Length: 178
Image (cartoon, rainbow, N blue to C red):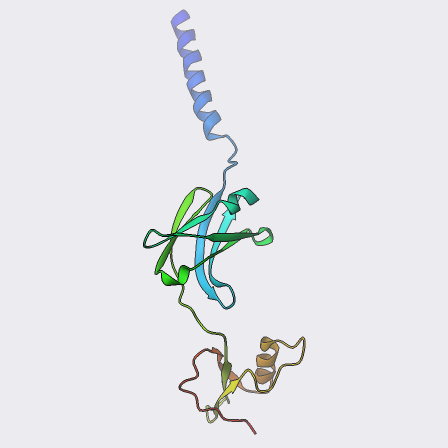
């Protein structure tokens, strides 16, 4: 009887230890690399999505290395409402890849290609009998009127916006709509 009692108490102890560990609330956090894009005026922006809490000191401790092993300065901002972290890295455009270390996790990312600003857009009519490139400078947009508002007006007028953002105009012959 004494042996059975010791055996039963031992089994209950083992089950309690395993179940207690398995059922403990997860207070951890995770971070996932979402991608990178070039933003005019900011450069390469690396976007992360996270769960849990991130402190300001952890954001200040982010570091980066270029694919040659060169240390780079990283600056990260927490967009708490979106649960996203956005990081910029100085002098990153001279590398193909960069390694960012954030809250103890390392991520390799391809450096996005530098792109220029949107110079204009291309429209056509429903029959494709007219295809026009229209630069953003013609006409000048009034204050509070966005590029998207302007494109919506073209579409409301029966035109189809074929390309919302033309970045290279070396092939374009600029014409004016009458």
